[in-house]
Amino acid sequence: MPTPSAASRVSSPLPDLIAQRGNTEDYPENTLPALRSALELGARHLQFDVQLTADRRPVLLNDASLKRMAGLERNALEMSWRELVEVTVTEPERFGDRFSDIGVPMLAQAVSVISTHPSVTAFIEIKRASLRVFGAEVAVSRICDVLKPVARQCVLVSRDLTAIHKVRQLSPYRVGWILSEYSSLSALKCEALVPDYLLCEYELLTNTVAQLWRGPWRWAIHNVTSPETAARLAARGARLVGTTSLRTVLREFRNARAG
Image (cartoon, rainbow, N blue to C red; front, side):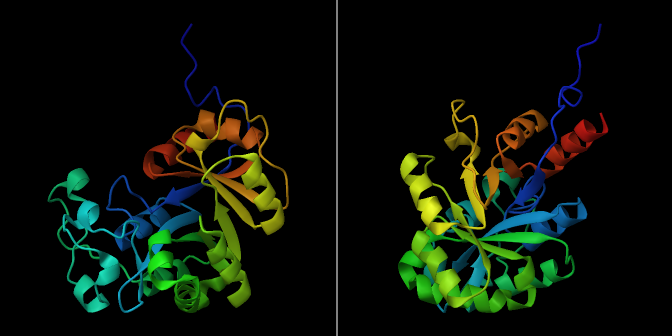
C-alpha cells in the first residue's frame, strides 16, 4: 500500500499562519514586494521589523547593519532617511543581482499596504538596536504615531519589556512579548505583564513542554516549516505559527486541510 502523504497524516486542527517579514521565499525580507506578495498569497497575519533612522523615521529593517540586506558596511541607525532612500536592499547572498530596484520601506508605506486589507493583523517588532540608541519613549512614540491609521490591525511586539510597558503607557495598541527563553522566570514575568500575545521561536521549545502556559494571551510560535509541526503546536496551545517559507507552507497547509 502507498505511504500516506504528509498532508493526510495531519488530523489535528491547524493554527493560522503568520508571514514572517512577508513572502521571503520570493522577495527580500521586510520589503513592500514581500508584504504585498504575502497578502496576495492569502496571508491574514504579517510580521515585520522596525528600526529608526538617525532622523528618527521608522523604517522596515531587521538588522541595524546593512551588510546582509544591501552588501554595505553601514549602520542604518546612523543614516538619515534621505541617505537611506538611496540604498537598494537586494539580499545579495540569497538573490544575487535579481533585484535592483527595491528600497528600504518607510513604515508609513507599509501602513498604506496594510490599510487595503482591513482583515489582516500586523505584528510590528520594535527592534532592540533602535531602543538602545534612541530610547523606548522616542522609538515607541514615533512608531505608534505612524501606525495610527491602522491601529486596530496592529500588535506591537518586542523582546524588550520596557518597550512593551511604554506602548501601554502611550497608546491603546495590543502588545506582544517575544520570549528569549522558555523558562520559569519568563513565566513569572508573563503573569505580571499579561500581554495580548506571547511569541516564541520553535527552537526554544523542547519536547518536554507538553502544554504552553495558559492565560488570556494567544501564543504565536515562529519558524515553523510543516503542517505536522503546526498541528502538534496547536495541540499544545498555539493559536498562530509563523514561517519564512510562506508559499511552501501555505500550500502544504491547504493540502492538509483538504485531505
